[in-house]
Image (cartoon, rainbow, N blue to C red):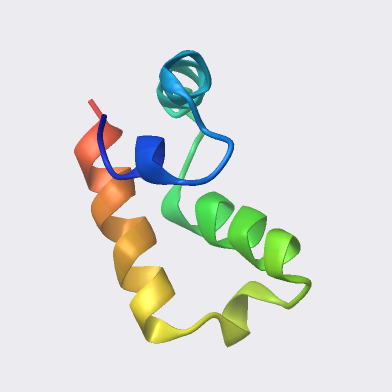
Length: 64
């Protein structure tokens, strides 16, 4: 499994669905930041730089 598949509660099936969702042409890095901020209960502007870098690497790895 890739990095996202190593997260708690993310099995192979959900990992594949998340990757498929990331193929949405309207998806962008800021959308991913916004989702992560929502999960953490903060505005995306306040995400740790390390978190942003990890999200950027993931986004680039799944974007076609």
